[in-house]
Length: 108
Image (cartoon, rainbow, N blue to C red; front, side, top):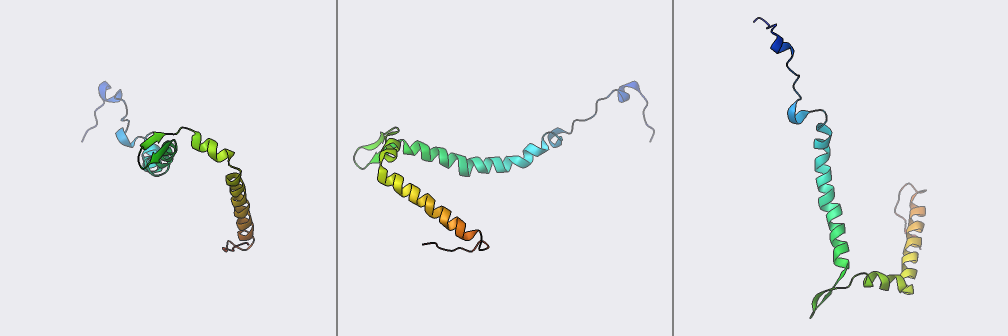
C-alpha cells in the first residue's frame, strides 16, 4: 500500500484521543473515590448538621431550634467536664497503645 504525500494529509492535526486523553484519565480514576466520599462522608455530615438545627417533638413535630442546642451544650459545665475527661481518657489509651506495639490496653 502506497503512502499519500498530499499536502492535506501532512497538515491534518493529530487526534486528541477523545475520552482517553492524558488530561482526562486522572479525573476518571479519581471520580469513584470522590463520588463515594461525597455519598458516605460529606452528605451524612451535612445532613447531621442540618438535623441538629431542629428539635423533634412527639406532639409538635419538627421545630426549628437554631443554635440553641449548641449554646446549651457550651454553657453546661457538666457536659464540658465530661468532654475534657473523655479527651484525657483517649490520650491515656493512646499513650498505652503506642509503646506496647499497638496492643489494646485499658488504662484505669
